[in-house]
Image (tube, rainbow, N blue to C red; front, side, top):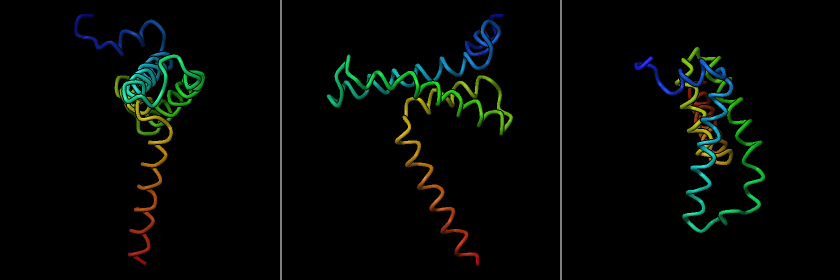
Length: 110
């Protein structure tokens, strides 16, 4: 048991979905703390109302990506934590940039 990661131990107790949700919540809290540190938010502001649904959605997205690409549970937990930290706006911007670049590459080959 000493050679198991935290994600593997949590998965054994609560299952993979709870582990991903935990990673997403930690990511959301880190993002919130970063925004508070920059004085973009209050510590106990209305933005905290959006944190739980965003964390659940982030965990679902991380689980879906991991299931699609056959990732290990610890990788899925890490990905959901990163997605939670980046937030939906940043992830959307990255995806839009990647997809528009991919579309430009496809247009060059026609």
